Length: 246
Image (cartoon, rainbow, N blue to C red; front, side, top):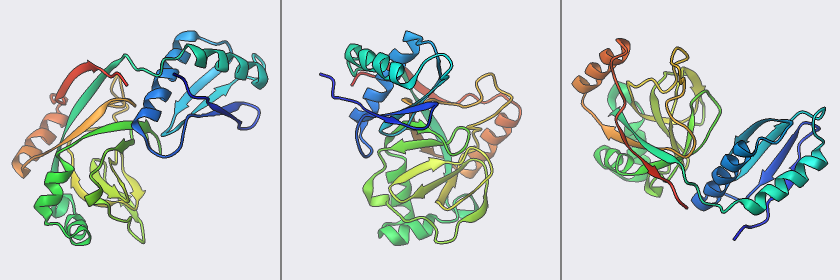
């Protein structure tokens, strides 16, 4: 059964469709299901649809469709949505070298959480993380599902540069920096995989709705993968496309 979507006007070229509050897998599944239906519907005037944790931003051309008319069409489309996602959801296995110069804040995270560094690594690499949305940087995935025992506040003073591939924890979330960037998350490891590469046909490795599983590797494995990546010979391991039904 569909729940009502709240329509919010965001200027004269965008609408925000609010599906719920907070970070919730079922809410995000409804957003992805609706987005898929919207993309297949091909409503004239829509420029782009951008999903977030609990809402969908729809950008449109006011010369082709008015905001009022678009709301009517989206409301009608909502009645057709089952809230179920029948798409190929891929789990990407991301190799990570934790600690040391590759994850300089690992010991700080361990100290804050009362865990040992090995326990932090084991907890961090023991779950599949749902990609709720992409944003902030090209390919930066906002992940859900981190064990609450790993919650650690961001740095009080952000770093001016964090290297591409850095894996960090910020509050209740974890993620990968796809390119060099300033940032305040606690760095616990590094992946040699290129999450974002503008030279690829598909520049961003994954999409919203896919999953990430971190895999702890040794330094020798890191260097081996790193060399393969440079030679464009490394393929990220994946687990199936399975039907993602909610």
